[in-house]
Image (cartoon, rainbow, N blue to C red; front, top):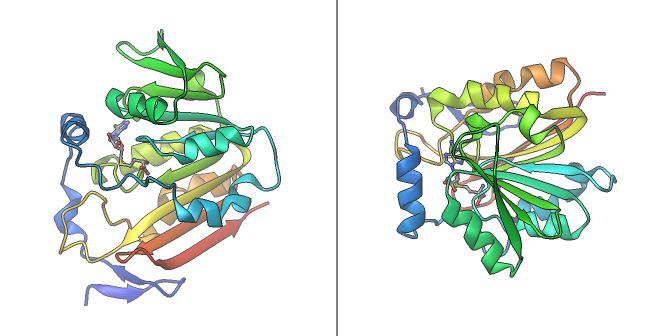
Length: 240
Ligand code: SAH
């Protein structure tokens, strides 16, 4: 038996062994962008962000919202247009340049003194700042802390061996009472090598336990999609 139902009633696959040691290098990601192998990109934005926007924003305005491993997600533009300040990080400069070009947004480029080789691409209006570097080079002293997180194609794209490091970093970037929307995918990990990787709900719980312990993420919404794209499970915690 390699499957059991979790608290949200979703089948959990426990045989994640085939994916555990898989590593996708930054070079391979850059190649995906060069070869246009970017099936993950959603031209129209993500329907779950639309659906759960209220959870992310919680009625607040002028938020700082973080898009880890942002690609050229069009939702960054949408949230910036709503008056929020968007910060993203992405290893592919091509992705970031495509983002600004596709939205006809003028931007400027500057080095990031704290991170050798990194660049910050910032919209001229100032409300979209995209860092071109590895997520692991960032820290709150460089990017500050955030009120909201949109984690789609991010935790699931991180190499399984780096998940703990990634989650710990996210926790250090959380403002008190922040909201975190996480989208994962549900499928049999013995059938597909990833990414996206399969991250069981039980692992999500332990990765982000500190966020709840310290009352950082007031709203932590974990959304699991099944292969066809429908919502397979949803778990929301409100720790006040
Ligand atoms: N979140 C985006 C992109 C998902 S694909 C979306 O929803 O469309 C994952 C992205 O992470 C790719 O664009 C890849 O280039 C980027 N990436 C992979 N490893 C990274 C790292 N260590 N640091 C920053 N970006 C990374």
